[in-house]
Image (cartoon, rainbow, N blue to C red):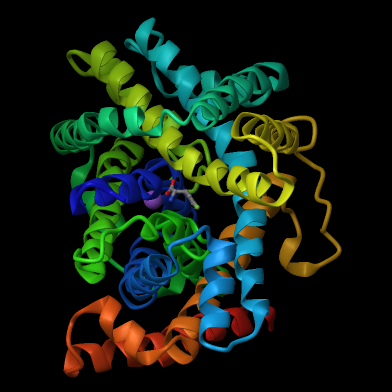
Length: 448
Ligand code: PFF
Ligand code: NA
């Protein structure tokens, strides 16, 4: 059991806060035109993400096992189909797929720690910084090396079960990351085009938002909160009974959202001040933040710290992705934790090679191009699309349906501990109708 509410919040935010906030949120916001996308994203967090986070943590606490077994136990206890166990399975497959590309991007961050520390950014202009990033992407062997280093770190942490030590370090490191983000926002305020960056993020222009943009916003709400795949369920199983599920889930969601918005506020003023493209894609933070580190006083220190902390944030998310895979291998195949971490991690590493190649040799390889929605998508794009835009919202919708329609009502009431008045009733309404319908509507629109 987590020693306290704070310990759970730190672990759950460790999973939530990661590359999704600092790398993915800014670049997909840039690609989808800014303000309108951000509003839809925030709506998805509030109306869909938070209710599902509550439901997932609650299911986990009641079941008290790994996700597959929790779903089986709760289903059989309430006389429901054993098929609910599938939900846990889908989560494991999604973890596997996400970690394969997450590790490659984590590798980019590691390589940038080195660049920052050796003052590569000092005084560099947009072209130099752009060429540096382009050079990294164009070089599969270097990408593979960093991807391997990241994966080895994740495997070692999970295999040796030194998570508690890591979580203690994270107590200090995550607030530090938060502080550094504030420094970067301060720099953007002083030296960037803050007005334009702010307007880009918060002034909605709905004509710039496509149907796929709405799906991306929805998918990102799941991705950034680590929802719909059993990770929060697994963490919930350790939560003491006396702690409020609602308050903790809301806290984690708010922390995650604030970090993403701060990252946006740090990056977009630099994008506009330096004449860069907001829609530059996955390289956005790697092409903007180094400009700031190259110009500001203390940039070598701040830059090294920033990318170092980004790596730590990515690692805490990555272990929450490998953990379920290893647990599953332990339970089903009866192998030890170490061997499980090795087998799971190595297979994920192999799949990661496809992402490495997506940025160079396979940049023009679009495996599912014959299906219109997948036109122009590389293997990396497809892994991202299938997990964030399809599997996670689907898993989350099923979790909401399970908690809203199937789970024992009295148990839900007891777990939530917010009485059975208006608050409880409106929560149940959201869980039963708003959340599943929201996901379904976005799905159907995109299929059409
Ligand atoms: N939430 C993480 C991020 O924003 O970087 C990514 C992630 C971690 C997604 C764990 C899913 C997950 F199960
Ligand atoms: Na996140």
